[in-house]
Length: 117
Length: 107
Image 1 (cartoon, each protein chain N blue to C red):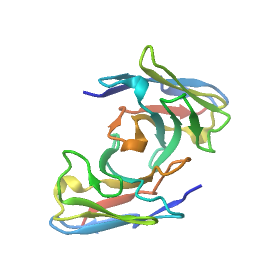
Image 2: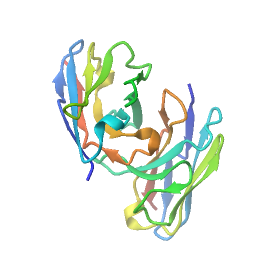
Image 3: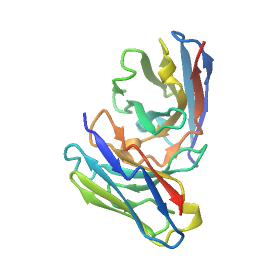
Image 4: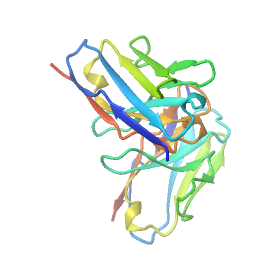
């Protein structure tokens, strides 16, 4: 059974940093593209970032480019999202997801990031 | 970037009805489109991928169609559990984009 267990959310001040983690199990993590998707309170889904399994290419939404960094530790089966220079508009529930480009059937439980002073 | 326009934003219907939600992409995306259902406080759940392929375990009253720029999600014989929010998602090219969502409400 695929499991994606997220951690690392919380309250952070504007301009601050936070790192989200997504621990994967039940599938071959090193062979899977992984994604981050977020949802601001009461709003729709927004794709944030992808990291491919092949070569670890990374992709970002314009709204986070230059501030967020996606990475993976395939030895520990963990996906990360390093978020710097956080803004109020980054407040959202962040989800990790497996293989969105193959039909995103597996998602983490979501973790809330609140950016506020 | 590919824009995805989903409509309607809200849909009121009754149990047993048939409803249709549409998504239009700003350029051709082939059949690289998925549909998700989301309930309050939960992660999205995959219904359809590659525009028309029903995900395993999803009831057959859900169906998807379309290719290129115009896509539809149809739900036949609405059940109480179907009242939720639905999103389309294009994964033809980066940046990936989601539709704005359709909230399906009980009439």
